[in-house]
Image (cartoon, rainbow, N blue to C red; front, top):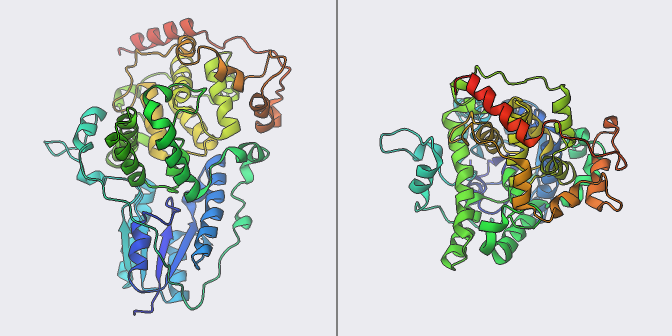
Amino acid sequence: MSDAPVLVWFRRDVRLSDHPALQAACTGGRPVIPVFIHDEAVQGLGAAPKWRLGLGLECFGAALREKGSRLILRKGDALEVLRALIKETGASAVYWSRLYDPEAVARDTKVKSALKGQGIEAKSFGGHLMFEPWTVETKTGGFYKVYTPFWKMVKDREVEAPLPAPGDIPAPQSWPESDDLDAWALGAAMHRGADVVRPHVRLGEQAAQSRLGAFIAQIIAGYDTTRDQPSVDGTSGLSENLSLGEISPHQCWHAGQRAREEGKPGAETFLKELVWREFAYHLMHHTPQLLTGNWKADWDAFPWNQDERSAEVQRWKQGRTGIQFVDAAMREMYVTGRMHNRGRMIVASYLTKHLLCHWKIGLQWFEDCLIDWDPASNAMGWQWSAGSGPDATPYFRVFNPVTQLDKFDKDRAYVRRWIAEGRQTPSDTALAYFDAVPRSWGLGPDDSYPDPVVAADAGRKRALEAYENRGF
């Protein structure tokens, strides 16, 4: 059996370094066959994350070829594909990195049980999180439902040092057939938006490491302040790469720790943001309803507007609410595939509180439009903003998008970057929005900028009245 290959099943972990499953396979002395499966989970992705996945797989395949290996692509049910590959290659083991959303857990549990039942070694490894969800407990044995005590529990906990990339990936004597990535057409739903977003993508493991290095060297010292200023390059931007596992949280954590030891003031805030990601994943693991329903059951009776086709929802989706901070942030998303964190809070608050629309509408729209889409962070962010989630912003806290703009974009540089209407010489980025969005919207830079759907003060008043009437 020493010559029987190991299948390494890649999912949201398309990197070579700090990859425990790959490292274990490569040190076992057996041939290694990297595999990616286009299954129902991939089919269900939104337009932007599916397109970004395709780019990531292409880049990762090239990285494997440089190592004398290759990425085998197959489409179908995961268990059926793995069984077929085992039969074709004589593989005696399948290794993979754990995922934590309920669909992945159900799939992987089924796969592990079935493969073990036929005598195949089936083993899952960590790597997507710094702390496995079942290893962080309160003093009474439950899971944490509030972020601050969660942070206090893990902030001094040892995080495993990142593993190096394997020096060699042993190849089999012959390779199984692989699907053609282009034939999967993972970017089909992006349409013309792909050409607009593509220059803003930082693709692959090498780019992710460079991005982390530049952030630590140039930005992290002032991160406490710059992270809230949407017009400046003041964040790490690593959410895009973390979402596909082109970099690991362990690598980010240890870089942040070194920066803190060097006395860089913003380092601890960066570490807290990494732990916020962990917190979202732990909550998703323990309470998977976070993805599909109100985490706080008393919100089930709230009369959200759930009509996705309503005029106010369409204006919100188009970045035409008449509220500059909201519209600028939405347009940034269409042009870059990402949105500044402060913008995410503002657009989510406006949809759920000023417009009283269900947070699921926003969650699903982000799921379709963000190249850094992440199931746990997306759900946690929307429920936090709406007030229905764990450790949520209080329901009576309604962000004023006008005063927020005065505070974080005083000179309106962010607004000028993304909003073209009413300007004699709009910026290229503002004009790019009209190239990215569907033609069916019928929008152009010569249009008049709209009046607010709901003014900031009026929306706040309406939201508070609605909460009061429901007994909150």
